Amino acid sequence: MMSLHAAFRTILRSRCWIFLLPLLLTGCATQLQWYVVSPATEAGRANLLFMLGGLKYTVLLSLTAILISVVIGLLVALPGLSKNPLARGFNRVYVEIVRAVPLLVLILWVYYGLPIMLGVAINVFWAGVVALALSDSAFEAEIFRSGIQSIDRGQIEAADTLGLSYIDRMRYVILPQALRRVLPPLGNQLVYMLKMSSLVSVIGMEELTRRANELVTAEYRPLETYSILMVEYLVLILFVSAWVRWLERRLARRDER
Image (tube, rainbow, N blue to C red; front, side, top):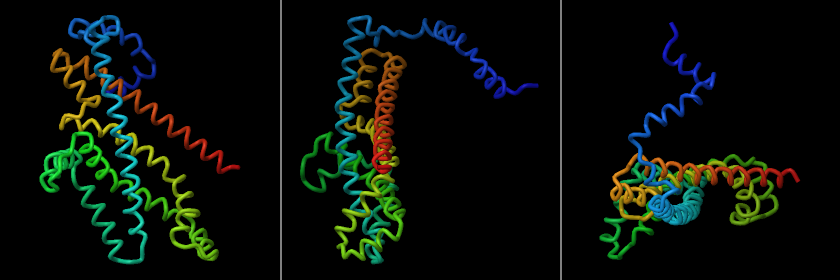
């Protein structure tokens, strides 16, 4: 007797689901109210524009945080490559502590706790940037450490033979090669950052998810609204992934020359 999993796989292979899809949509039509986000109605267009208004904040928040996290991650990774046990200990302690803290908890701590500790006011944007950058910097540090360690030892010895200082060796020999190798995981971290930026909505950041939550509160149509939100993130992530792949191919062609 055919199992349920085997039957489902057979349906997918036969592409019968294409004919079943209209039936499924028709069955849900009595429950879904797509006019809330339909571009065919004035109210739907207004709601769509309201949701898309959070896109610039999502992108700006993610790009700012990823740039800061890359710098912090590189600075944290370098001590991990040192022969000094104290420097390696700093790297390990930083990475383990930051990775152990959930991002949502870190966002709340930065927004509510950091102003009390430092005695300064911090708005929701910079609280989100600081929390995202700190959380991601631990992963960036491990990415850079692995990328630098993957460089052939002969490259380092050749740089030493030329009499290059540590800074020049890193700047002209090691880091250019390491950056090409770590580009794919850096791209993955950017995608991760775009998705995790949705958590900043809990402190009031007007990004995509916050706008969707506000629309749900106003229209009481969560399924339709969050379906559009999923599409927004899907298109954004696919675009970023395509850009990263294009950049990888361009760097690969440059290496072939």
